Image (tube, rainbow, N blue to C red):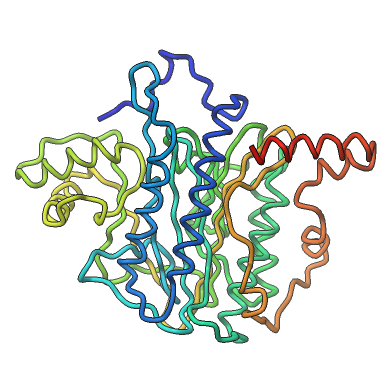
Length: 393
């Protein structure tokens, strides 16, 4: 198993103070945007979910395969999928990435949540987006969940700024969801991300729950966060679906010599290809090996499972997820699509009523630059031009 924890040999700076790291995050972000857009376009009536997920993974594999192919100190730069493509529909909360033969097809009117991530050299970009399958206008509870989730995501973008706290974000989710008569889903966490770490210790809770406590943290310069907003028209509590769970992550601190040859083959492939980040059983080359190997590996606690959870039938769940870099120039969102067609397609009778939230959402998502602009309009315009030039390159 490759050791992703020990980077002291090279004294490598693995945060955003290193421009190479920022470049890798942005490159991974561009690939995620491309994959997310393509998967979104493939979510049409009668599309097979397994085939759609496979396509998303293939795009991420192919696109990351085109970059960073020179060896560094005789080592290949690792890259590829950081979270397999999942397409979870209606009341299903997430992690639905079925194997062939166990899949479902999308239906017109479905609320489909697409979730995926890739990495370059362990630097992860993740995103999720919600679509309504088919072109029909939606004015019911589906619209409430989608617009609640969208406004929560927009609020988070404005609050995840250096010096602010995670509790401010959780409170905003609660206020906005209430205005749309919806609930943030319990157990959903937005994590800090680091090199080869998709679920860092600094987290933002989607909603406070008695059984789940996290420390209050302050956002700091050069940190990276994946903001995950999952909002439900139901109680905001998930229970396990009776479908095969296919998304797993290698439990880094456990080892065991598995008994059967297929299970050993399975674990060997996981250790080689997915030593630190989540994968789907679909990503394992031999399906039979995956089916046999996973049960033995689970029994010996060699894998962490991402279960497929669902709300009560008849409820709807919407999700938006994006990755932000906390840079000296302000918080930079590198993944996450705009509302797009949903802007016209989805009409909710509810809207944000809370005065503080209205004010927040009306503010710029890049307040630092706004302040500078007021100080010295001309200098800022020049700087902006330079920045844009760099980004285009």
